[in-house]
Image 1 (cartoon, rainbow, N blue to C red):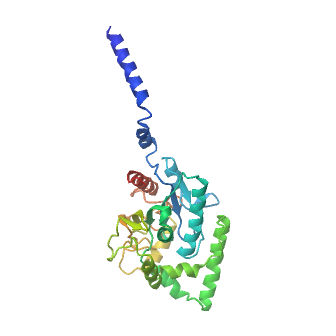
Image 2: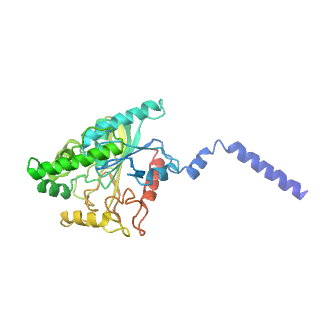
Image 3: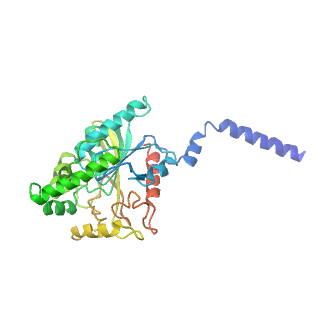
Length: 322
């Protein structure tokens, strides 16, 4: 009799669970797809922009880490060296193409930009807010980088050394575009540098102030409304040079970091310049490309892994209904 009662109770429990499965589908999504955001994620690279070259991803293992947890991820194909406005116009075309192919299933995107990719995302946010649900920037020099001033000063535009520098770097950019199948116009290194020196960054922020802190090293608003479209804003970055064992990028960023006088930096972006919208963190033990898990995942063993940082942010976006 006792066994019969237990069996009946078990059967009833199973039946109840089966009936309730459709209603609790969200539970399983949260369990097995914790990074499944409402809107697709668009990853936007910075300078030397590429998606994949010779099997190496710009966002090393990050798209797969996000997709394995339910996210829909796209990677922008934009010019290696160009102004954020020109790169932004190219990105808008890609967003429109993805949206059209989705037959009404997609209306907005979560833009996530590294370095200049953050500026590119800001341009798109301001000129096409209808396409943007959120903007997240990583190691983006929103108030400029002294490295750009040093480079511009060492090779002034119009001088012999400036011409040689321009020709060489644009050739490198064109090669990157070719290898990555970016299908972009020719690279323009001077347009990129002019945006990140002291004068250029002031001009860009005057034209597109949304999300930028009004006080030095302050925090911007966590959301803005542009033409009736509410957009959530986030940022994070690092402040270190030597971060991974045998990481060949560490010495390079230690050298470029010498351009900064007294601000902690990742070799390209100062921790205060990184601030935009809600500052999630500005002091990761990461250099400028550790943020996107390079070189080939050789990052600090004593810091949160970049892939985990991205997955956690996707969870954050999901919880915010984005």
